[in-house]
Image (cartoon, rainbow, N blue to C red; front, side, top):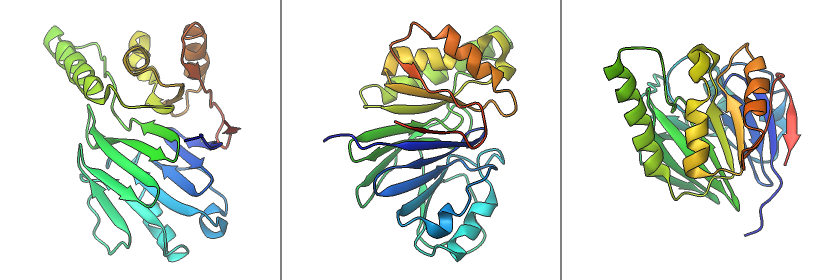
Amino acid sequence: MAKELIKIKYLFHSGFLVETDNNLYILDYYRGDIGDVIKKSPKNIVVFSSHNHPDHFNPLILEWQKVRPDIHYILSSDIVISKKVNNLNVLSPYDQLTLGNLTVKAYNSTDIGVSFLIQDGGNHLFHAGDLNWWYWVDTPEEMAKAEKAFKDEVQKIKGEIIDFAFFPVDPRLEKNYKAGAEYFIQELAPKYLIPMHFADSPEIVEEFEIEMKDSSCQILKFTRKGQELII
């Protein structure tokens, strides 16, 4: 199937707005300007949250159903909702869901919650949530445990088609900031990788792009809130 054009807007941190021909996705909204898109878009709107950390799940998203009763939510099973939410879908690791022409499979995280593999027509998107090689300087035992957990999960994903991968490049990991992204690219060969989870340190994206200049994977660089690309 021919791939449609995709419009990607960077919101903040790990939050993105992704627009295809028929659908509009809001991924891990934390904060950022989405304008009037909720009210005015004629497209199907699906909101994803990968886990309950406040930098990935903002309860504000649940208010959007007041202006768009047809909005759909796909949330990780660790997110506890105390109010009635229409069109709510809850996924645990390895659950699958089909909504119209949209197919979603949840994979695990190396923190909490899930990561999402989204198929929309001919496009395949992967939002990692907090799936990463959390390569903190720690005891040798803890470092080995973190490495194994990440690499084992990547191997479970191996074989999936990934066109666009939204993946953490976190400056708090210091010299190890790109270990997870490099391994993900090496093993899964996404066509594009979009760095995320860098909060107010967009300079790490510039550094990562330079480091990956010889990679077969194209790095899509978002460094400004509200920045948009059409691919």
